[in-house]
Length: 121
Image (cartoon, rainbow, N blue to C red; front, side):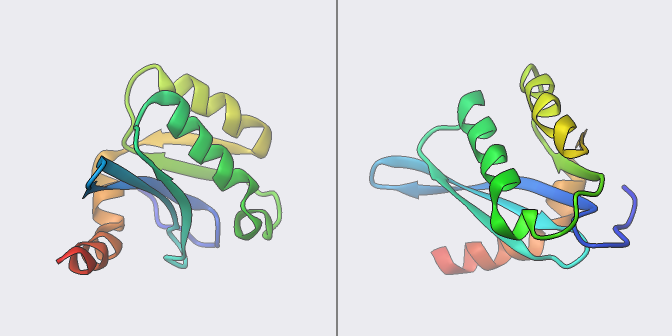
């Protein structure tokens, strides 16, 4: 995975599962690789394709994401299967492309995940 040289060049999209009384809740986040700034995209009790698409749309509409100029960007995630085509279709008009790289997501979001894990202890 290449190294980001500017804000919003590479964005890691990920979720953190948390056990609740209602079952598992998923906290969706996006992290800018350049600044390590994390955008909270909300929570959901499901992890289906429509939920994932909804949270990616929230990212694209988020004021902090839209603040910088509309330059090409790469969304990196660990999502496999049919959802990839749907994500690519959403990203294309925004000059975005999709890269599936579970190792890069895990490695580059581990400090945030560690913080989150400590909060749950």
